[in-house]
Amino acid sequence: MPALKRTAAALITAAALTGTTLATAGTASAASYHCNTSSKTVDDPSYTGIWPDNWDLKTTICAKRSGSTVYTYAKITVNGPNFYADTNVFESARFHLQVKQSLSGPDKVKNWKNYYGVEKPLETTNHYGTYTTGVISWKAGSANALGDGLLQLNWYHDGKDYQNYTFTGSPVV
Image 1 (tube, rainbow, N blue to C red):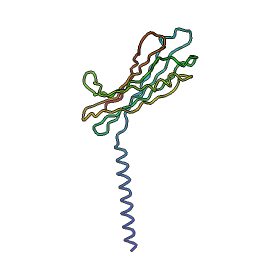
Image 2: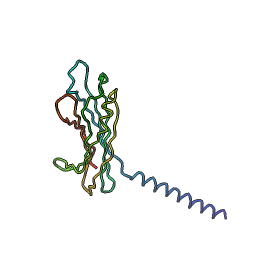
Image 3: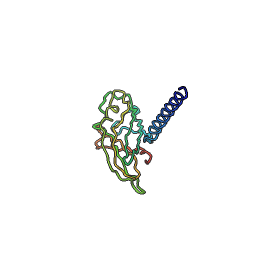
Image 4: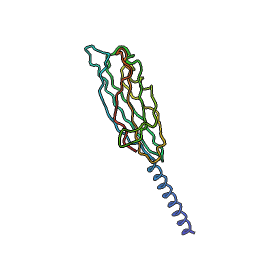
């Protein structure tokens, strides 16, 4: 009987280890996001005063492939000037997120969505914050694809519509 118990224990242990290994392999092989982060400093074109009016913007654009579908999202971090008394610096602001097919020439936009929630961290009292878009996708099949996007700012009192600020897209997935 002890030999039978040892065999049963060994089989249970082996099954548990195999199950753990398989579960870990499944998790490890699940698609993970690949990201690029880029930054730029932007001048407020509507402000001509003596105080520094630059906005430090950082964007991380990520993409992943799961089967034949490519998913992308962006995270935007804003660090604006804190001397503004008015929190209404923009008529409107949005992040224009895109899924693109990677081509040898210009990449082709396959899906896109505008995210207006980015205006909130831009116009808080300290003009600092982070915003993460939702996720959009495209059924790419076997085509290479990437996430891309641009921040579109419509500044108050500059007499212009949206101005586009581009960032580095995600790696190709």
